[in-house]
Image (cartoon, rainbow, N blue to C red; front, top):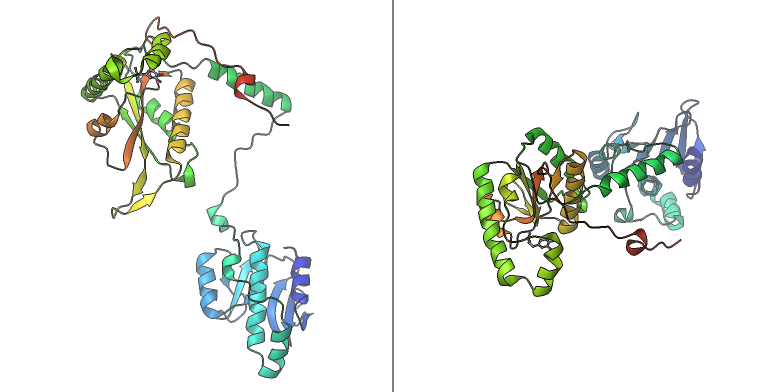
Length: 354
Ligand code: IYR
């Protein structure tokens, strides 16, 4: 709302006029000779409006941009800073409210006239869409300006980099610093999530005894999988990967990152709170994790020993956390091999609608 919009709106209300009774800067709008809105025409940084006292307090508590009325009786007046946090719709609502407050206080005779003529003064507050207060929002910092050429170059370079990522099953026992794993997990934690609930826990295991327990339990499940639980066609689909029930990498890889999805959150009082799109969110975070691992020159396997509930037991996770993926991380074994796979071309994975 600029000053013209503000002025036009105030003057559009019945029986209003403008005055500058105080100084050269302060523009005042009145209804039937009583003030209902003021502003400084030089800066137009704020507007001062009358407000029902309880509401006035409420608004100040709720919005950083609403303050006690500048130069006015603080009980009845608010000053609304025009910092962009209150939308025009909200500003119009509070101007109307101020107008209605003043009209309601007019002597019955003159007041009734305006009350009859008044436009829709009872816009329910609930209908107003507020922007969150500015202190809840901060400027977006990561827009990279660059030439179109550089943009394409970067996209190509990143694609070439990701094309080199592979799932590995043969790990070296070469150690990886905890700090590096911590950075990689922090990178995973930057993924988007439903209502920003960040419904994930990453357990980073380097403890040899815990890794041994995980391997033992995983192999017990996988033994069953490869000996009857998986269908013939599934086993056939896996032949190209040379997998079997044995999982030595679970002990050889220096770190196992076990990703848990939090199906709900628990607060300090043990109260449950909903999470949303948990699998999508945790899937995205796992994707970020894999690219961070690759970026750091390490390798990983996206492993899903099934069923995975043994991970909750071994790692003593609470009931709201469910195992999602088991990701060994480390360096590749010397002369490690991977299946000779190719990726689907663009026209098999993408349909353009232009
Ligand atoms: N979880 C088993 C089987 C397995 C299943 C799929 I689908 C793979 O892509 C690979 C393996 C295992 O880890 O051996």
